[in-house]
Length: 384
Image 1 (cartoon, rainbow, N blue to C red):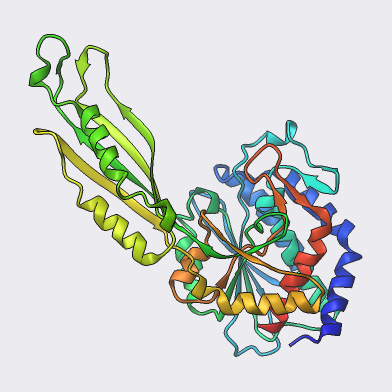
Image 2 (image 1 turned 120 degrees about the vertical axis):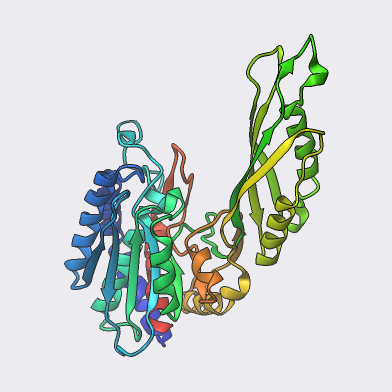
């Protein structure tokens, strides 16, 4: 455990390096890395890898064919036999190549603006400076630390999920560097499970004026199914079943034979997730002659508070020793931490940068919060 004096020293040392942190974030942001460009993500990955190798860490490149390569960074602890701490982050952003031309990295009003500053290149920099702080204080973590930087989080973690779950199964705890919630920097101790279902409806075409009775209206069937889905939507319980895309029809005078409905799914508990999926599978056509096929479902499990409670209490103590106040919240969005929590591994999310505007033209981070967040991460690495 860190003493209160050591904790305060870590924070003071990191505050002196705030300008360096901002400078490195600027370098990272200027290396654009959209999920859809393997070359760009790999170029940025090499930049991140160089920062870690320069600090004496061991970096393994997990090569991918259809997306950017993932990075596995190993940082030794004092006790090699201990199960490691897994720290999760991602290299990819949602911004297309060329976004920097109209959204350049810049500083204004105590904020750093630019594509990916908040989600989540600021978090990647926090990890580097947290490691630096512990090295300079001659206070290495007791456990080994594995930093896993993936390349496809923003597109659903299709190639990285298996890697994340494999690392989590042999880890004692997982710390996730997704952005904090709100300008208070709240950690995320609960996340909803998320997914998407698709209803494919087949009717029968007919002339809308001459013989509409011979048709089966796929759009009418879709409307009836939407009304049925409304009964599954329970926002007071945190369960949302939200139609988001509706398609159908060919011409105004043709009874539509095909319709398609996409439904966004969110649920706060694994039990709720299973119930919603069971209800979706039980849907049947309402109009005579209509056919209905349901596919898809939840793709990320929820992060339930029981997976985060012990780690959050530890984080609160670390923050208190530094004279900081730390609070928690729930999030409707998912992250890779949801995968690890579902395996029963203690997981704490939202440890990244404090800021606003994720995935928007005004994405930004609060500069003065950077040393505090790096110190919090350093304290957790030293005490878990």
